Amino acid sequence: MAKHHLVPKSSTKALFGKEIRKHRESRGWSQEDLAERAGLHRNYVGGIERGERNVALENIVKLARALSMKTRDLFDSLP
Image (cartoon, rainbow, N blue to C red):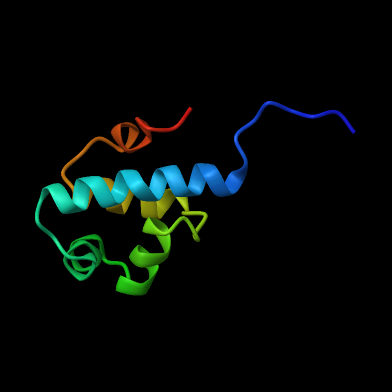
């Protein structure tokens, strides 16, 4: 089996989670604040930030809207 030079899924999820956390904390919001604004559960937001969740596109859009950002800007830290 050939080795691919792709970022493992867990690393991608972790990078995305760090990006969400960075934007949330820059606003002084708790996970609960972001979850409420995005219409998501706080535990789900926590799972995203810890890199445990493979976030659905619909929820990425909800997070971007809650953060008053363009969806594409949430991917800045990804390869």
